[in-house]
Length: 219
Ligand code: C5P
Image 1 (tube, rainbow, N blue to C red):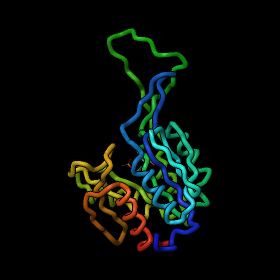
Image 2: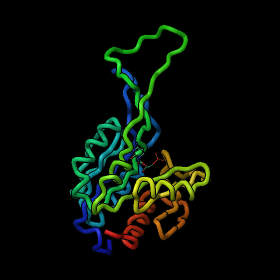
Image 3: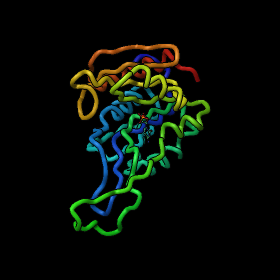
């Protein structure tokens, strides 16, 4: 691949869902496939970057000399794992679909069926990307947003609130975009620029994202 810009740069990427256990056999999760994050990791490695990919549970595999894959299960584990590497990173990209809440208690035994209804109390998970934003020094921070209303406005608010440099807005208006699919349609937003892209494969979207980072990089 042409440019030398990413050669030797340290890039942290989160990918996939998180699973939040309820008991030894059950969890709360989501349908994130991890495909976007893994595509980003592959592209970054091809550009010569040193990639640390912190991944929730997925069916994907990735072996590349420039990529270290760390597998985690829960949001808390994902946060702790990323904080081991975050300070030395040049770029950090949060593409994981982190569970916003987890069960307040994890039963040691399988929860038994008894009453008609079962109420589960949930507590808030840490926001990994926001935590990165609060301890940002040199890192170029990239987040994803999936909005259903006032997309552009909400994405810009998120950019500020989480102290990001770039936010990738996933369009929901197009079939084939987002979760589980091999394609995605994105709008890339910084404080000063907006670029809209067509529906593409996730590996092409990953290439667009790194091209955009290169031309909008502020260390
Ligand atoms: O606030 P919202 O969940 O819409 O933000 C989405 C962005 O924040 C994504 O980049 C996602 O990976 C990240 N995020 C995170 N930790 C959370 C929730 C979201 O890193 N607990």
